[in-house]
Image (cartoon, rainbow over all chains, first blue to last red; front, side):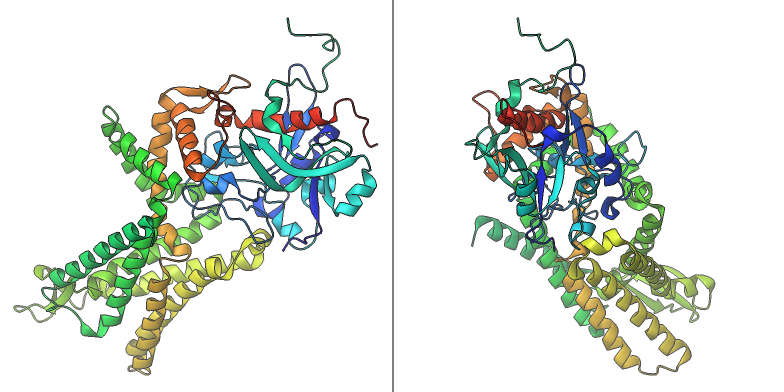
Length: 214
Length: 347
């Protein structure tokens, strides 16, 4: 069981795109050799901004609900596990339905076509977290974008931040086990993800700061 | 009782009655039925009810129902049927008979699964027809050193009792148990040594099936050893012990990992769905405008999500399902960035 006091906090604004998390992730025993974390670019042509995306471990996971094979299970400690190998029928429903874009239809190590016929996703390094260790990504993240620890530790280290775990996608509210950090003084109760559909990257490459929409 | 449960109950009852009728008819009104195997028959009938019930309940879940309906529709779609039949045969041989997809994941796991799967298939192909009285052997009236195989009471070919063919045939369950035991040991090795498997495994889901298969095989071999080399020592007890292991496995069929045997063929329908979808209109992403999935898949998911009580609609026209997974990840970062705009950060 993952200890209740241990929590995952994400501050994507701290991400420096070093890919340490991406490399470390593949060391995890539950998905050996295959990295489950996404290091997403916001607008590759104009910005160096990156976002590390791990599974947010929803309280009512859409991926599990839309799975026709009932292959995705949530453990009593709130971790949404990767698809059960014997059940997953590689339909990609979870890949397309996850509001955070997390599950991967794994094509295999170096394979160009979908060979595994298996959905794989971040399971918060369950082999490690279930015995009290940190997930691989949070262990190696040099900038603190991925932080795993107690709420007290986080508050001590990030006095201006506040964790929230409620997200809004259109009309849908999603509650998660993993937290995202927002300003302590802001009135935000939930992060309205789809409101950012028209947003521009926070960091633009040199010479692009003055660009405005015509 | 909900409508789903009633439907599933009726379907399960029908399947069970059909099997009971097939047993009666196939054994020629129980003339060829071995009464000593009655326990096996009843547990098979129970397993049939359980498997059919769970299958029917499973098929009624919104995402499964959608794939079930769409899978058949795209399979029989005019212009695709011939190609689909060819692909179906190719997939049955490659993905199911040869377990190619497991081979691509891990060669050791492939060998484990092949041993277990083919051992179980061989054992089932021998056991069920014999238990149901669909096949029986009788001494040939003309040649007393020949056995004749009767299928559904109809005499077919005969073979010499003391022949290599006879030896191989009468020991088919022995060969099956060799395969299953080897597979069980390989699976056991993984479960004892693999840290990833150990973190995720559960007794009922992962250990119970292995223990049951191992117990069936070992007690079956003990029976052979008893009558071959030990003059039937402890045979009655061993026969009872073996029956207990088989019956426990049959009863466990609908509940645990064994259910994937019945669930897994759905993958064939999914393949057709994706192939036909790939040739049709693709859904462009609302944010980056790149196509990322078939429009049919996206629309079907929107329907399924609505049936499940999710509301990812953005407005009257747009739905979050029309945003590609990569842009969804980017949106998470962007929305967090928006929250911090104009505010000084922790250092």
